[in-house]
Amino acid sequence: MTEFDPQPETKSTIDQATETIQSATRRVGEVVDAARQPDMPLDVLTKLVRQAPLPALGIAFLIGIIIARR
Image 1 (tube, rainbow, N blue to C red):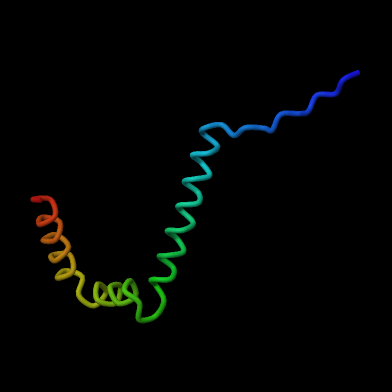
Image 2: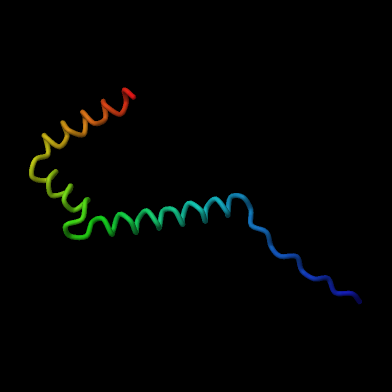
C-alpha cells in the first residue's frame, strides 16, 4: 500500500478576504484606541465637539464642501 501525502489545505478567497478585513479592523481599532488616550488628537477633538457642537458641525460641513469641490 502506498500512502499519499495529504495536500496542504488551501484557503478559499473568501477566507483570505475575511482574515484581511479582520486584521485591518483590528489595526484600525488599535489606532483609534491609541488616539483616544488623554491629550491625544481624538480626545481633544471629542472635548471640543462636546463643548461647542453647533460650531463643530459648521466647521465639518465647510470642510466637506471644500473637499467635495476638489
